[in-house]
Image (cartoon, rainbow, N blue to C red; front, side, top):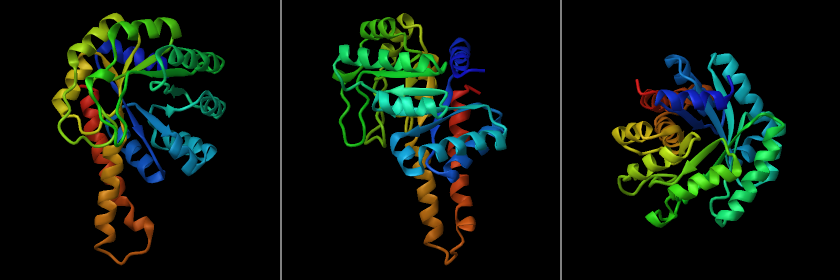
Length: 273
């Protein structure tokens, strides 16, 4: 099944799919162990910085081998691609899905860049996600002025033909300084007039009930990065401070388990089980 078909199926069923970022073998293993245990599909995401860290070829082969080894239905997605050039490299390397993030550009420029990426992806049959509105990144402030406008969302989708749309309704990347308050009414309006699957970035730290409500209002793909990365590092630090062990094969497993537990919880939430 293509990722486009899976997203469409989730939209019809009123559920979502988890898109989890991985950074090395250990975080990938935690994600896939959880997905296998629940029999749930998962989207594996790579950011540009993770690609630079692991190398594109290594990262792609690691993801593909992991999905096969753990017997998990999944797809590989470029998270926050900053340029058509990076998108092209990822498509050539076999990504199932790519995100072009021109959300900080003027509206018309965002449309032009997204249309360029759509043309690139067509030859590969790949899914394309774009972003409209302002989802705060680390250190940035989120306010309602940057929220996605429903009419603009409809126009953007019509003019680009994009497969999925990430929207700004009150989430942010990284940790929240205070509990987020998602604009679910805005989400419902966008969902009503926009036919494509809607994506929620900044999925870490959103209260469970609010996340489920967002899914019931139209979110189909939920991105997760910060929570799993934080769980891995916190557990690893705990181990390192309490042992003289130098064998990383003995120090990493509990950190992998910490990632697995976060992913298990999120998979249950997004699948609406």
